[in-house]
Image (cartoon, rainbow, N blue to C red; front, side, top):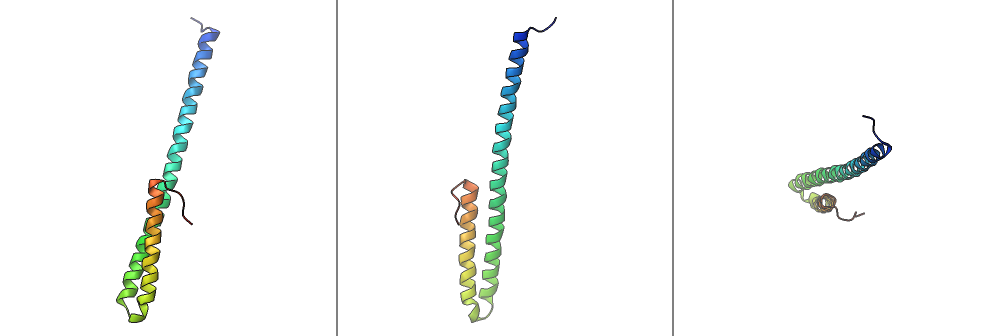
Length: 92
């Protein structure tokens, strides 16, 4: 039995709605992936700062200033990572 024009039109509307829904879902997934990637990169950067601070603190007394700078950098990077992970506003 042949489809009527109304049947074809209804099927086309349903397909269009499905495509629109799928596009919105893909866009949300891509945005979330970007946030996770940024948060992971910032977390690794913070870990690097912590390691550097630990290393310089273990060396001579002249490294105290450098260790403090690295510890501060670790705190900033960790804050950025957490903010990115929870979707907060970007910090400069």
